Image 1 (cartoon, rainbow, N blue to C red):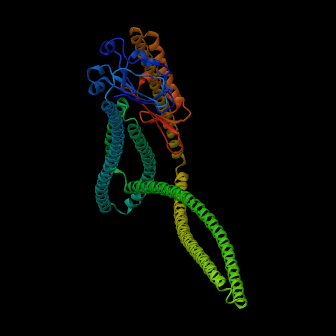
Image 2 (image 1 turned 180 degrees about the vertical axis):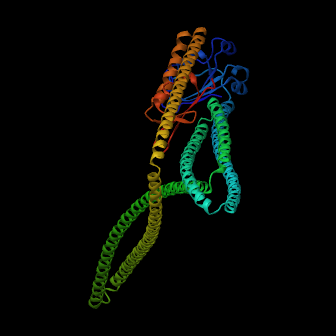
Image 3 (image 1 turned 180 degrees about the horizontal axis):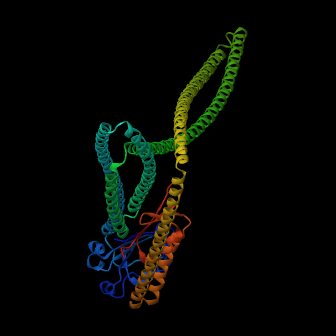
Length: 624
């Protein structure tokens, strides 16, 4: 199934199109044109290319088999379902209306295709990981098997050497007893001279054999190490080029030939060891000790490399933790500053509210005192009026009593209102104070927690630094000891080291030449593949143009439409909002993506990040 979702501001030209076809629709699509549906209405294929991209909200394209599933026989040539932007009013539709449920079914098919594609990519990734893991395990098993075989051969050789030594001891003892029984005083001096000559000859022969054995052993050890390094590199190359069947076959053939060469070499080594079984005990013991020293040196070098790798890994982990701690600390500092700013703002608001409450309270107290003074003045005036005119003022007193009662009621009501306002202001002030205390307590608790976390982080960092310093000191001491041993060994065998350097230089030159040939072969293969893809794309495009040219009443308009599709595809890649382009799940540059033709694309999906608005274009290529 093909699905192209264009989520950019583009659509079709402003025009009025009568969706009613001038010929039966079933007859029109018989020319191989897909079914075109716009906003739920069928339209003629001839009107398809008249729609501008800036008026399209989304496009879903169905393969013929899926179109038949949804629309029946009229979808035998595929279907294109278009939804125009809601603000576009220049497209009138009067043709056959498609059931909304069918449109929902189209969206379901498109969604299922997307899910299947995601599952396929996930399965491919898992299969790739499993293959890499299997290759790694196979390489480790092969290396382990070779190591065990080497140890077994060494054990066999040591047994043979011990047997030869015992036999030699018996022969020497028997010879010594016979010569002592036969020899007399005159023969003793002759035997001594002969023994000195023989000892001298044996010493010279021993030195020669030791030099030859050492040179041969070093050459063999070098060849073995180079073979192991070469085998390891080939295994890694094999894992990396797993998909390339030819490279895999070559690597397997190479491994087989190396195994045969190694078996042949081991057989020759075995024959040589059997031939040298007659060598003296001192020479053999010295060779064994040298082999043990070299093995010990190799083990120490391996341990040093592992320690360095571990130290490097720990340093990287420490740097990552420090970066995370720094980021966390900055975030906490930012949060603290914001909390302090908020607390300061609350304090200022509290002071303002308190000042307003105080001013209001003073105004209310002043009004209350004035009311009381007024009340006292009125009472005094009433008493004076009663003293002046008792009988005549009874009516007046009654009226004044009523007025007094009214005034007292008003004063009481005013006093109650003021008291209520005072209580509310006090309650509000108390609530603000409690809120302030709560905020301060929370800020204090948060600050203490942050301080505790900071102290713990510092303690951990200090502990990690001490541990790192200890490991570095141990690694340094071990490295110095190993370096000292290495320098002594190099001083002892300068001539062998020079020969080894020459052989390594030749091997390196050969390796570089092989790598150069491989890179050139890969570049040539890639260039050939690109040229082939380009030619196929051009052929496909030309074929599509030819098919479109053959369609009746649509020659020039269809060519313009295809060019428009090609241009729209290029524009979607060049869209400045598109920050990443993925082809078959692999990120590429926009320049590489622009080399594709729209006919190479099976699926093109654009998604945007809701946070920063950056877009990602995911492209799936056709199987062809």
